[in-house]
Image (tube, rainbow over all chains, first blue to last red; front, top):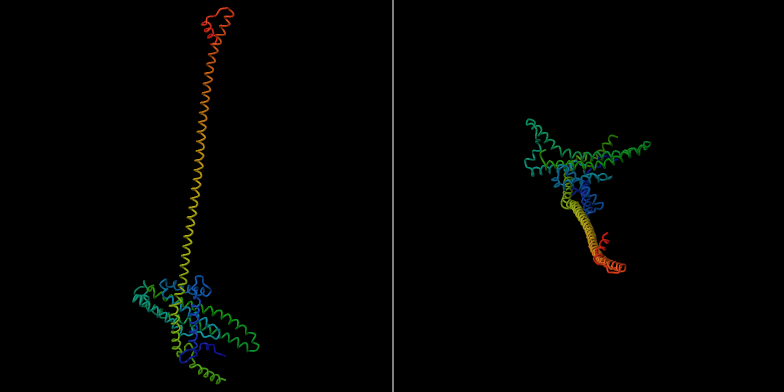
Length: 241
Length: 181
């Protein structure tokens, strides 16, 4: 029987291009997002059909999250945040289809996305506010003798952001898929174990329940990733607490 | 038993390059990063250039359209209210005018009939006065005739009884005495 971690193997498809199953699902996911949104908005009708209504709900949802966290100024980052949300959400959900590869279950992918977010925060913050952006690490109203400690703590917390952001998504996806695979394996193992086969439906029920939970986690982690991105972007737009 | 397990393990490892946990296999990182950059870059480009402008255009158009529709509806309503007020005013004016005309006609008719009545009364009064004057004149002439007839009759009676014509002055004074009482 296949090991629970075999599903995370990167397998080359076109070795010359470095094209792997991971690349295939990235391309497929992006094609799904771009194609779906272009199809949904093809009519630009005032009264939307169901696809356009869905696209508008996604748009308004992400726009609401962004403006809640970063204000009206945050809307200049909307294409970036919307791309991140759709990318993570789509690849999380596509990965739940049995036999499909989950791009977001690889730490390098989630870390690259998180680094992109933090890189955007730092570059935009320094460009827009110059050294004033560094005031982010110096909270106002702190006694002078405490400042060195506070600054160190603030810097550590800032650096830990991309790590926690990427680890959270990666670990959730990884753990969920392993758990699904383990319970699926139990069904097969018990089914082939003679009299114990009567117990086989129990892990099957568990696998069904876990699948539902994983759908929730897929959506929730995409949302959490987006909300934290918005909060970090707010620091770049409005530095200084 | 242990040996077959180990062999299977090495075969397994050999089949998948290093036996590392796949997400921590650094050999796959460059390829994943390149394809992530390509796909996410394309996604961002399409979002920024086409999809987001289109979506916010749709939503903005709808918002503007609803706003203008509401504005138009409010304008129509105020116009309708204005028309209603104008109608009410015209109605009130017409009613007032009708009342004024009725009042005018009533007073005109009243004065006319009053004038006619006055003229009639005056006419009647004049006729009455004329009639009274005629009666007065007749009465006076009749009374004068009575005196003449009475004195003549008295003179004739006295002449028949005494055989001679009485003194007319005595008869006149006797008549006056009788007529006064």
